[in-house]
Image 1: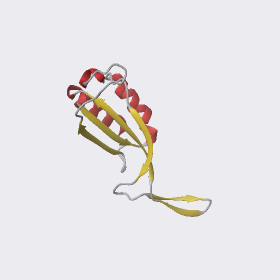
Image 2: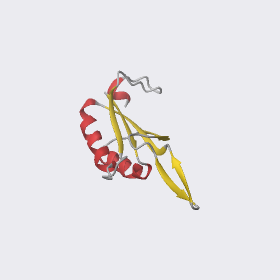
Image 3: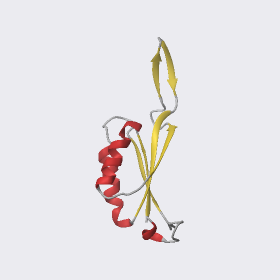
Image 4: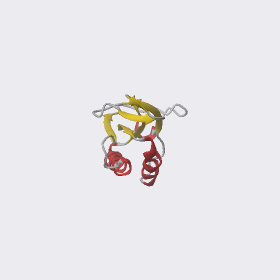
Amino acid sequence: MKLIIALIKPFKLDAVREALGAIGVEGMIVDEMKGFGRQKGHTEVFRGTEYEVEFVPRVRLEVAVGDEQKDAVVDAILKAARTGSVGDGRVFVVPLEDAIRITTGQHGDSAL
């Protein structure tokens, strides 16, 4: 099993959710967050005054999948989240040792 973590631009969330739904992903965790990468934020002008925005808004998605779904999920996220501009985000794939469904006590892939 794998835990796929994607950091994407907030306005791409619906496109990524639809792309994942189309390949059979039934659930995910979504968090709103702020952070920065290589671009180190940006500047904005509000009412004639320039402000430095050090942390940019991002959405963090977490999806637990079986090993056989990993490549399809990563490809769907990459295609749906890509804008072609700097700061599109990152995708991390982490080994997932176990998953347990609290209601039934099922372990492994059957708990997903």
